[in-house]
Every structure is written in structure tokens, then in C-alpha cells.
Image (cartoon, rainbow, N blue to C red; front, top):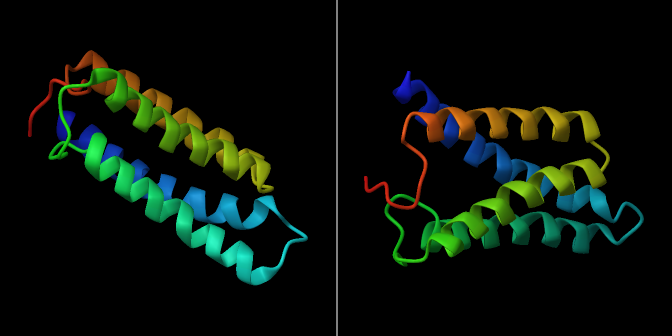
Length: 118
């Protein structure tokens, strides 16, 4: 069960990047297309940078649990919020619900905390 939950966690991480792009593009619906595309590319890139540095299992910056939790909340919460604001509230609700359930299950299995080293 742990392996399936960790695999789902990885898929949710990828889904959050897609949600950031879709939500970022859709948030400013009457804006210039070139700028909307730039936003849709920049948000996932920034999320990848933050996640890799502060939240990934093999992150380069360790030692701050608040930063670990904060980056995950920022990326996942931001992806759900932008998806909802960008015109996809049902997708946002579904994604957010699966993210919460997965996090609770992994936490109960002892597989979700900044102390976990992989």
C-alpha cells in the first residue's frame, strides 16, 4: 500500500504542475496570449525549482521543517487555487481532495514528514 501511495504522490506532484500551467493561463482570460503562455510556463518552472530545492526527498536544502511544509503547501495549494480561479473549480476540488487524502494516508503510514530520507 505504501508503494501505491508514494506513486500516487508523485503523480499528484506532476498534476500540480499541470494545474499551475492551466490555472495560470486561465486566470487572466482577457490578457494577451503571449503573456498568458509565459505565465503558464513560468509557474510550473518556479514550482519545480522550489520543490527540488526545499521539498523533494533528495532536496539540497535540509533542516527546516517549516520550509519543507511551506513549499508543499504553496505549490499544492497554489495549484488548486489557480485551477479553480482559472475556470476549473470541479477539477480543483477533485485534485485537492485526492491530495489531502493521499497526504493523510502517507502521514498515517509514517511516510510524509521532513525527516524522511530516501
